[in-house]
Length: 393
Ligand SMILES: *Cc1c(COP(=O)(O)O)cnc(C)c1O
Ligand SMILES: [Zn+2]
Image (cartoon, rainbow, N blue to C red; front, side, top):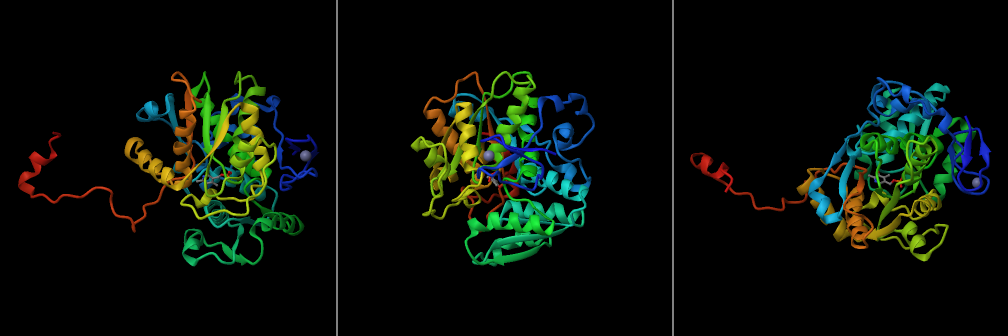
């Protein structure tokens, strides 16, 4: 299996090696020559693209990765001045697109006889890796910051991994864990490892299949580590190379204003993303990576496709979260709602045209916050006035 660096072109062979000698991340080579539409039969979820993946399904929960619906959302067309679609990644078993990368990574570990996996995360990725690992009886270690409150760990702990609090700089832990894993034969499935990128690129393939023969004009997604943006870029590049697409869709990234290193670099006209040291609290904490390992690659994706990047404040994120629920019937988590908040900004800059298909990637499903009261007053009525009350006035 060959890995290659998007930036300098250097190659390697171990898909658990995330970094190139030049410092940038690697991804797994798969080429137009590998593309086999005949393999797209009777395989569940993302495994229909088996010919473009480094590993095959191990059954069980992994068969539920990918195959998410692309929903038309005409109620949002006027807001964005385009034909709006939502890619409903929240319909995954653990609620986010992370299950795509996890399924491919775990399948690889299983096939190679690796007995243990690990990840550096205290959120959606940890939950995804723990769930997939336990289902195939792999040992799983989740590395979290030492100051994380216990209640944030409960959603991870339900899948019974070993959770370790680690003292020290959490940004550095990302790389330290990858190194330690390679020495101890543990597959460390962090956010931008090549195996994860390979799994997550399938969202681009699915979007194109859903919209065939035209393909999307623009895709909007939230970025944190930059891994998912890299993966989607890779998926579209492979389709372009296979002449399935005539041109790359424009990629638009959204971040939270509390922590926006990729947007800062975009605005400044830089080619490289620098870490931010002053990140604030935000409702979109699952996308608040201050030192994104694939930040520069995500930025390259934006530039190469003629897209843009924007940061949005918490108030707009919460408004967008309500709008997606009220008008599209989709509950998303705040980090995921940044796509609509950001898309409104892009639309205000005339980024989209009315005859274009714009896909908002709804990366993660919302959970009900029972501490929040409903936004409308709930009336109490007698059963004898049921008819009058049910009638639409
Ligand atoms: C992980 C995550 C993101 C960010 O993806 P990256 O690959 O880290 O850029 C966005 N939304 C949700 C719901 C996530 O879980
Ligand atoms: Zn390189």
